[in-house]
Length: 242
Length: 242
DNA sequence: ACCTGAACACCGTTCAAGT
DNA sequence: ACCTGAACACCGTTCAAGT
Image (cartoon, rainbow over all chains, first blue to last red; front, side, top):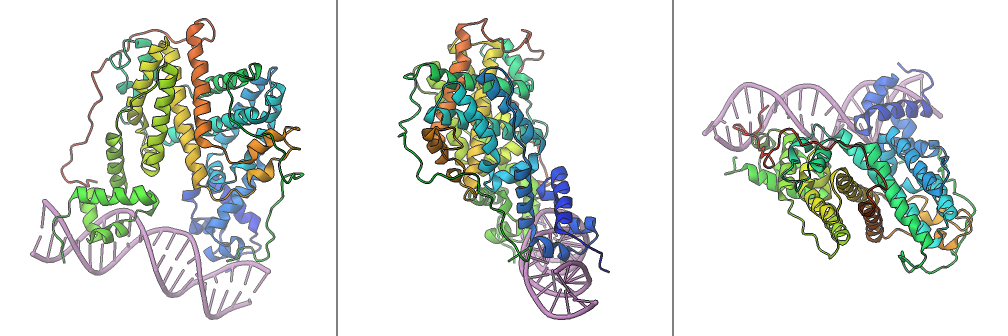
């Protein structure tokens, strides 16, 4: 028998919960229907198909991501704080973020963070292509690090553990180094160390403008300036479409 | 009717080819059987099941990965060359590398590269925990960057392209920066810029030993020194097992 | 406008049976 | 020792039919 008032939002809520907890691969249309107490085919009416259901979850995630407030006294400190905040946000929603990534919406998701970084780069006296390099390098650093961390925690017990691979012999008579490489890395510390190192180098070029030319970028005005981010939620009549 | 002499290696070769070209998700047992001209169930006899078939491919990939020869005059240049070579290797076998990663064999795969990096760190006068930091920071940097690149090239056309997001207004009156951030990044250049910046910072601490303590790591000898990497190809009788 | 069950074409895997 | 087809329990999706 039919149940009353199944809404699109109800479907999305249930799906989001399942994906957040178990990842998209464990979201099955039949399982979702069972959880909602409807027939599988009802879900199809509301969301079209599995793929566009996931698309909708991604849209939600992107618009849910809040602003980032830098903290710290110097631009370098504030850049690191942005990087840390970003890392936290990404690590908290691993599955959904991965889906955002796969769908090519990363740029839109990162816009607020990029704008913060631009502000700090300017405050540190960096402009133009150099500032752009800093922004992108930090962004890639954060996203890359998070991806590696994710892969690490998903990975099963390391088969030949690092401790077995590193001994004093292979470390060139540097037992302290062997010891350090044998244990698991402190991911938070490694992250901060790397971001600080990267930031220090790239901000240093602000002091010595002739030091390391980032690239030969022409200084031009963009062709068609736009006011703000276009809101592109698609108009839809019959939810699923074909 | 039965065909003659299907071997385990034949199965692995065909599977490796399919995975290399189309990724693991497009490797189906039925498709593989069709390509080999056998019944699906024959494959099960040789490799057990789909999961252990993929495991076998991963084992192959890890042992296939060759040594890395650093080039350049200074340690910094040689470190960057190792990073570039590593990036190339990873980008060339994306699917297989991802599988190695998922199965937690990354450490073993990276051991040669790590050893090269240790040698260069020592040559630059960096030892102990600081050298370990450099090795790991570079490794994470490379792997992270490659993962981001992979995600980018897999991603469909960016929905709100970066050009639409960045205009002079949102860039704080820095049209050169807006222009730089609006176009697609030069990934190779960004990679080299980042690795160079990271390396420069982390090697700099070799000159000023009191500058930035990496951590308070005790200097101890490891407990059970071992000679080399254990060869752990499992003994197997009936290939599949259960 | 919304929901339904039946059916289709796929999966990976197991099993008893062949030679 | 090696290969086979049949069968099972799953998928996502479509469709004609209900109300």
